[in-house]
Each structure stands twice: as structure tokens, then as C-alpha cells.
Length: 393
Image (tube, rainbow, N blue to C red; front, side, top):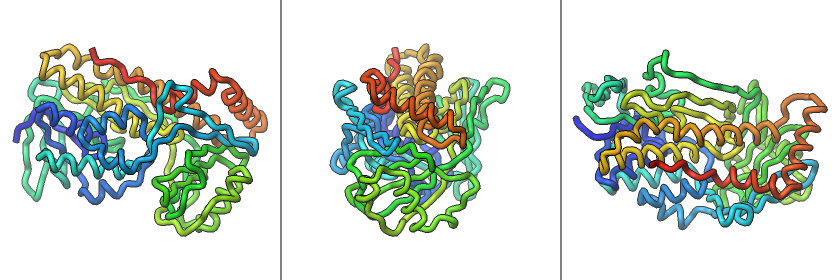
């Protein structure tokens, strides 16, 4: 087999890149180790920055998102028993975010690729990357018991934190930075109306909580928990009682509870790999970086990598701008580290970090300062809606 760009991974970043390149006449093949149903079974967050929304539209996969997604003009921080609303739209000159589940984004991109005739090979086993530091990279894999060789010009590693792409990078050229947090998020999905039409992030002496949603009838809630906790330890009743205890009284009183339809515990970490380019192989999204979900940056940061690589490859093929290939990593990392900072700050200021009374008072002082100052509110709003993409030129 031959293609121009081999994309490893059929999550939202791989599918988005493939669809954008396809629409520019650039040939791609997507390889995915799992089945389509498995990929669609991953439950992830769904707060999309405006830049991500515009990219999905450019990929021709935004019709259902525009119909069913919920545009949010604000977000609230809860602490000391009260709520402070951050008016995202007013503070950022009109920018907003959209709540639309990552599973739905993935489904829309899958359908768009199928309709466009793009090639996606699922359940590709033993995927290996070869010769990407030469001008003739290739990818080998096994499909239905047969070994296949895929020749290509470039490889995009969109296969996540545990994927083969970053593991294939030369160890002596790869530098990683990591912070693992000593707590997790217990999240549930329930067929109940959201307690608020906008997200609420709560700092409480018992720990962090988040009120989110997927639709008018589907809610997503989280509470900070110990990494030693098991899902089986948390009955629905225990979860709802704990969530209520961490919310302002008026919010807790209006919370509609019901049976959970999904429940899971996720650990939190910050992680960055540098560089993101090795010869003709590029790391994209979770293959290169992880953020704690507190800042709603995971999928959005992957989308900004896609934006950069898409324009680098488009200009390489259409304008002969091979010089831009060398800029990919630096362009991405500038924005990545700013998003890492914001996600780390949100995590640090909203979670219970221990029993130190001084540290708890500093958290509250931080929240008081930021929400009591227009400059502070603007800083949060600008980061939450997403910093501008780095220009590819």
C-alpha cells in the first residue's frame, strides 16, 4: 500500500487530521488498533473551544454539532459557599465554548470520512513505524492475519499516551516532563437534567466537584476522590450525597438525582514530550501531552496540534514549503505549555491538596483575587475559551 500521510490512531485527532487533509486532496490512510465500537465507547469530556469548533466545521463534520451542541457564554467557580460567574463572551470580545461530547465528535468525523471515501483500517495489529528518519518512511501492521506494508511520505502519531508512536521515537532524543497528582476524579453520567445551564467548578474543604452536561437530559458530574478508591465503593446514593455536600446550598437543593448509566475513576496527570517531530514522524495530541481535565484542554489541545500539522502539510504539498516541517514542534509546544500552565493552575486552586490550613487559605485568596478583578476574570476567560492558534507561516 501507498499513501501520502499515514495516520496512526482513529480517535478524534487522527480523524480530524485525516478529514482536513482529504478535503485538500492529500491522500491519507488511518490505522487503528481497536474496533470502531471500542473507539466510540470511550467516554470523554465535551467542552470545545471556538477554534476546535471551527476546525470541525472546516472538516465538513459540524452539521450535527451545530444542531445539538450547546453554546456556553459563561462558566462559574464555586467557593466559600458562593458562586462567581465568569462571562466568557463579554470578557473575550465575543468568544464562547460549545458543550458537545467527544464521543459525538468522533462519531461525526467517522461518518464524514466514510462519506468522503477515506480509508480507515480498524483492528490493525502489531503496528510498527519504520525509517521515519529517512525520506522513505513506512508503517507495517497485521490485518486479518496478513502482514501489510504501508509506504508514505509522513507519519502522524495520533494514537494517544499509550500508543506506539511516541514509543518509537529515539530514546536519546526524547525528553519528557511529568506531574502525577495524588487524587482522581470519580465521574458519573446520568439521564437527569443538568443542575445548571453552565458548568460549575467547585472548591470545597471536602474536595473538588464539577457539574457538567451532555444535553438537556444527560448530565455529567465529578467529585475528587482518592486514587485508592474503587468504583464499587461508590454507590449512586453515596455519590449524590457527596456531590451535594460540595456545592452551594441553592445548587444542591435543585440537583436532580437518578441512576448512573456510566461511572468511572480517572487519575490526573500533566505530561509533555519534547520534541514532537522525529524526521518525518509527528506526534499529535495525547501522544505528546496530557493535561488534567480541570481546564477542559485535552481534546482542544489535540485540535490545535491538528491545526498546526494540517497547515504545515498543506503548505508543504501545495506550496513546496518544506521549511515549515521543522517548525511544527516549536509552534505546537508554545501553545501546549500555556495550556499546561492553565490546567495546572485550575487543578491546584480547586482541589483539596492536603490538610494544610495555610494552603487552603491561599487557594481561597487566589480565587477571591481572580474573581474580584477584571484582569483576573479576563485571564481565566481568555485561557478557558482557548488562546489563539500559532500562525503557520
